[in-house]
Image (cartoon, rainbow, N blue to C red; front, side):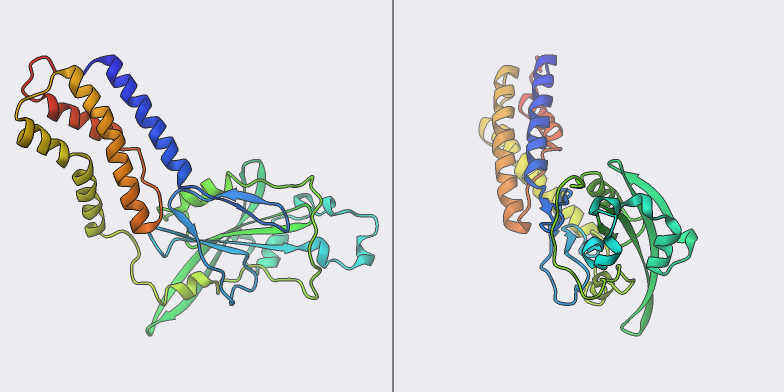
Length: 304
C-alpha cells in the first residue's frame, strides 16, 4: 500500500470517526439556570420519573443499564429569605462561601469522604456515599459518587452510580469537562417554600438495581458485535474477491474500491445501529477494516 494512499485513508477515517462521535452526542441545557453540558457518546437521557423529587435529569449508558448519571439543582438564592439577601446579590453565592466541611454537613458524611476536584476550571466537592439495599433478600452495598458545586446562587449536583473503579467513570469525568456555567447571566426561578435536599444514598440508581440483572457487556454481546462488524465490512469484500472476481485487483483499482466500500459499509453500519439502539455507528475501526479489505483485494498480486 503506497504511503499517500495510507495517509489519505487515515484522514478519511478520522473524518468519518469525528462525524460519528458528533452525531451520537447531545447537549443538555437546564433552562432555569442556563447550565449546559454534553452527554458522552453512547449515553441517553431517561424519562423523568415522579419519584425524582430532587433530580432534574437522569442519563443511562446504552452499553450498561446500571451505569447511570443524575443531575440536580437547588436555587439557593431563590430559597433565601429576602431579609438575608440585603447587601448581597446572586453572584455572591458561589464556591468561595463554602468549604469541604460545609459539604460534609450538607450530605451527612464524614469530612474524609469529601475531596475537592476541578473540571473545566470549576471546583467541585467529590462526595462518596454508601447505601445498603435488600434485593431478593440479599443485602447489596452500593457506592455512588457525587460532584457538587455552588455557582451564581445555584447548587449543582452530578451523581454517578459507582466509583472510580467503574469502566464508565471516565464518561462521567468527560461530561464534567463539558459543563458550561452561565455565571454572568441573569437567572430566574420559582421560590421554594422549603429547600430541596441534596441527593441521598436512596437514589433511583439503588431502585434500578432491583429490576436489572446485567452488570456489564457479556462475552456473547461482544462476540455478536464483532460478527456484525465483520459481516458488514469484510464478508462482501471476500465474496467479491474470491467468489465473483476470483483474481487479485491492481493496487490502484483496489484503492478506489476500498475507499468507496468504506463509505458504503459505514452507511450500512449506521443504519443497523440506529435500528437497534437509536445511536450512531463509530468510525474508529474503518482504518483497520479498510486496510484488511485492501489486502484481501490485492492478495496474490506481487505489486501490492
